[in-house]
Amino acid sequence: MPVLTIPDVPEDALEAFEAHASRRGQSVEAAVLELIHAAAHEECLMRDLERASRAAEEIQAAAYKDPDATGKPRRRYRSVQPTPTGRRN
Image (cartoon, rainbow, N blue to C red; front, side):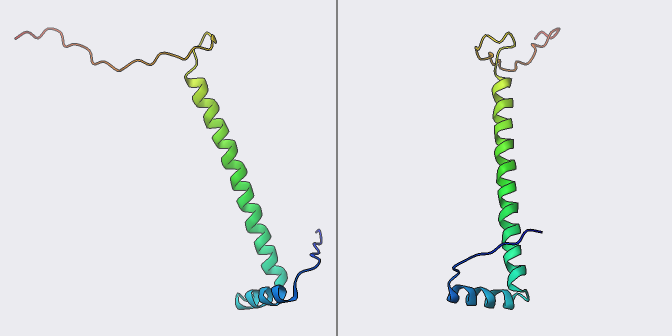
């Protein structure tokens, strides 16, 4: 497993983080690892969301293109109910 060294951490910040970890019943290393996992998870979620958004945009763009690929948008038609037949007043 890789080793991470963080140089020049201010003493007061380290003491505050040690107190934070202690209150949570963790070692400093475990608390830092938890922060790294949370940040990595958030980054993965953002990456997946961006991919899904691009895919949705591509699907939406493809849905409105004319099948003959002329670049013209497809006409959108309104749904019309059929006229009843055989009934006369």
